[in-house]
Amino acid sequence: MLSRQILEQREKETLAPYAAKSADSRGREYSEPEHDYRTAWQRDKDRIIHCTAFRRLEYKTQVFVNHEGDYYRTRLTHTLEVSQIARSLARVLGLNEDLVEAVSLAHDMGHTPFGHSGEEALDRLLKEEGGFEHNAQGLRVVEFLEDRYPDFPGLNLTVEAREGILKGRSPYPRKPGQTDPRVSPSPTLEAQLVNLADEIAYNSHDVDDGIKSALLHLEDLQNVDLCGEILADLDASTGKPLDDSRRRHALVKTLINLQVTDGARQTMENIQREGIHSIEDVRRHPTRLVAFSPQMTDKNRQMKQFLNEKLYQHYQVLRMSDKARRMLTDLFMLYSSHTEQLPPEQQERCKSEPVKRVVADYIAGMTDRYAGEEYRKLFLPLIQV
Ligand code: MG
Image 1 (cartoon, helix red, strand yellow):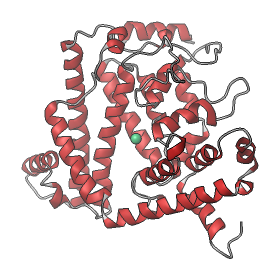
Image 2 (cartoon, rainbow, N blue to C red):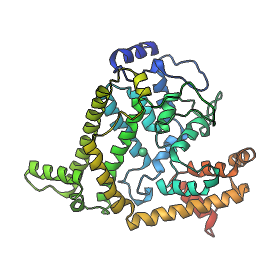
Image 3 (tube, protein in one colour):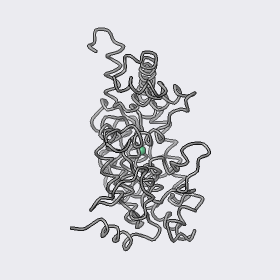
Image 4 (cartoon, protein in one colour):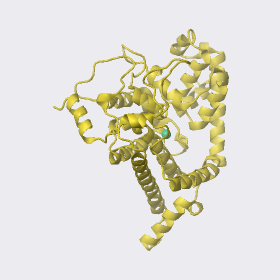
């Protein structure tokens, strides 16, 4: 059997000098004995997979609400795509796949039901209490809301996993004026890489889901530089007209491949140009090293603009997101003015914590269908509560 020490030694021998090494992790907030045969980040990843917030990703909206069809991405399948893309990037760059996987799997656990419209609603409702933001909420989930271990609140993940969840912002200092020696200007390359993988995944699968739902059309995508080039190459190389479904798959596959390859090449170039030889060099570096080339950045911006206009602002998408905003707002108003209608666990928390934050945590943890059910029970007559 391979011990943890042997696995840690292997990381030191095989990963790039600027990769994060589990033996050098900055540790956990509550100290625990190390595991016999799992590294610190394998353990983080396992804790994430077994937690409630992770399982609920299955029934949370990415862009299309769960009941709109079985084809579309949910937060869970999006998360798996991010993890797969991020691990490919990590492997080709010699970075730590376990850390990358842990951060990827947790990166969307702070999302509300119904995607960004849910987040906007809670942010507005909590304006005076510091607002609501999904990355910060993700940190609350793993530090506090997942309550399952006898010796500590949350999942007690490593500093590196938590800073990754905060999208690379340091989880320290945690109170104004409080400093922590673990604070660095930049997060690990592994955390930076998950951001890029997230962007690659949603740009590509929103194109896929958009076409499949018939809200976007392949002909319109010809005018988006990146997609137009791919489709022209595809037509030239196959020599015969492909059916729409094959064209869509080929487009999405190539979109992912081009972005991953560009990101890997540019990141390697940045690492070499900036003379990065260690993780300390990464942490001291004032700007992000994981990036697309300037050309890909421009093409991506254009594609995002297109998706924003044609997909996210499509009247059918807007109808659903506005309905979601109204539903969550009504639930929030009802729970916060009638806390006696909350489940006992939340009522208990209301005794010592700000009511609006307790209610926001409760709503943010819901799946789309649970929120929908709650709405029906509380607002429609003749429905059993
Ligand atoms: Mg994401």
